[in-house]
Length: 455
Image 1 (cartoon, rainbow, N blue to C red):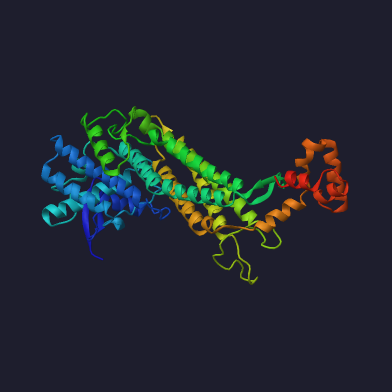
Image 2 (tube, helix red, strand yellow):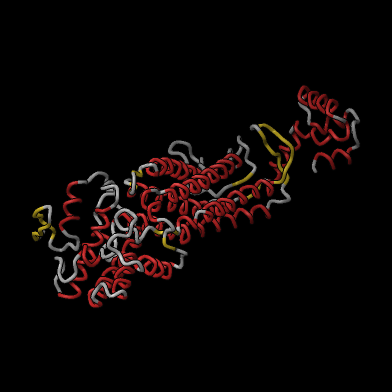
C-alpha cells in the first residue's frame, strides 16, 4: 500500500494514499482499536447531512465561499449515498464527546471536496476540515444532534412500520380466532373459558400501546443541540445558523426537528435518549410476553398445550428427527434481552454528564440505534415468519375446556359458591368432567349446563 505523510498539531503521521480521512482520524484509529465496532450507516449518513446543511446555511449567511460550500455539499451527499463507508474507521469506544468521529467526517468531506475542486484528494486547502466543514459547529453540539436525528429516522423509517405490520397481523388473527373457544389460564393454572381471538386481541393491544409509547418521545427527541457549540453558549456560531440548518435537516428527513429550547440541557444531558430507550425496553418486554405465550400455546405438539400451530422453519434438533422448535419466538426473546441490556448501558451513559457535556455519547448512540434496529427487525420477522402463519387447533382448545375443573365457576350464579366447590372436588376425586358430575347429580339440565359451561 502506498502512503503519504500528513502533519498536524500532533506531529507527522503516515496515511494510506487512497484514503479520504486525514491524520487526526488515522492517529485515533491506530491508537484506539478497542472493539472493532463502528457507527452504523444511519449515524454516518445523518452526520453527513448536518455537514451538508451547515455548508449551505453558512454560504447563505455569507460566512463560506459559495464554491467551497458547493464542493462540501457534494462531498457530504456522496457520503450520505454510502460511497465512502469504508472511510469511517473509528471505534465507538473513543473520546466521550464523539470528537474523533466528527473529525473523521470533517476530514473525509474536506478531502473529497478538495478533490472535486483541485483533482487532488486530501490536504486542508482550499477546503479546511475545521475552518470550513465544521464552521459554526462543535463536536459537543453536533454529536448529540446526530444521535437524535439518526434515532428518529430509524424509529419512523423502520421501527414504527414493522410494529404496525405486527399489530395488523395480530389483529387479523384476533378476528380470525374470535369464535375459537379455549381455556384461559392464570397462575399457570386452568381458569375460565375465553376465545383464542380475545387472547390475541391482548397481544395486538400491547403492540399498539408500544407504538404510542415510542411516538410519545418524539417531541424531546426532535430537539437538536445544534447551535450550542462547545458548552451551549453558541460561541463562534451565527445566531441564525442553528435554526436555518435544522430547518434544512427537517425538510430533508420529513421529521419535525427543532432547535433545542435550552442548549445547556441539550448538551449536558442525554435524557431524551434515556427516555427513548425506556420506551424501547417496554416494547421489548411486550414482545417477550407475546412470543413466550405463542411458543407455549404451540408447545408439544402432542405432549404440550398445542392449542395453536406455528410455521415450521427448520429442523429443531441435531439428534431428534422430526422435532421442530419455535425459532422465531426465541429470536424475538433474545433480541428483547439485548434491548434490555442496552437500556442499562444507556441509563448509565445518561448519568455520564458532568457540568456542560455528557461524555458517553458514542456508547449511548451505539446502544440506542442498535436497540431500534433490532426491535424493528425482530418485529418484522415475527409477523412475517410466525404470526401470519399461525393456525388454531380448535378441537384441542375445546377438549381442554371440557376437562377443566375451572368450568364450575360458570355455575356459581345458579348453584352458589359452596355447592360449586363441592362439585369440583367430586369431579377431581372421580376423574370425571364438571359436566358429567353435574348431570349425574342432576344439578342442572343438559341444555342449561351447555349454555353456562360453553359461554
